[in-house]
Each structure stands twice: as structure tokens, then as C-alpha cells.
Length: 119
Image (cartoon, rainbow, N blue to C red; front, side, top):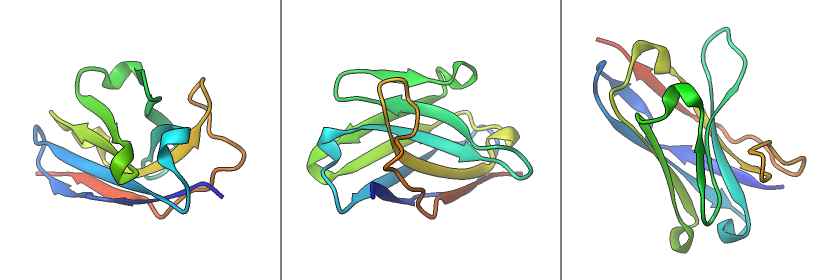
């Protein structure tokens, strides 16, 4: 299965920045499109951003604050988050996705990384 290990989460004040990472486990990242997702307490998991080797896509409400990038040599995908808001508090996950940023059937969810925005 296509799985990631996420890291880099933590506690940050509103308006702050944070970068989270996910490392591909047991497969070659370069062959896949990858998406970041998040799940806030009491809410469904939602898409944040996705990246191919040539293009990026963002949830409309997050465009301009979040930046997705990848380093295939490190088998790692990053999500740089800035101007963080209280509502960005969630567990953040990576998954392999198709060209429409839909999670692949062969993908599985990792443990995620908790991002908490609080003063």
C-alpha cells in the first residue's frame, strides 16, 4: 500500500507559520501525485492541496496561504502554511492521489500530524 509518515505539526499562534512534511514509506514518490488533507475535530476529512511533478492545486479557501512542494530525491512532500487561523487546527495527512486529486484506492492513511492554532 501507498503510505506516508507525516511530521512537523505543533502548536502555533494565529498568524504564525508552520511547515509539515510527509515521507513516502516503501515506494518511490516520483511516480505519484500527492495530496495533503486535513481533518478537524467533528468534521470530515477535506482536501488541502495536491501536487504532480509539474503542477499544483489548492482548495480555493486556502490559496495564497498554503504552499505544497515536493522533493523526489528525499521522497518527501511539504506543506508550508502561513497566516494560520484558528480554523486551520486539524490533523494533517498525505495520500497518493489521481489527476483529479482523489485519493487512490491503493493508498492508505498514515498517522497524520496534529496542527493546533491557538493563542
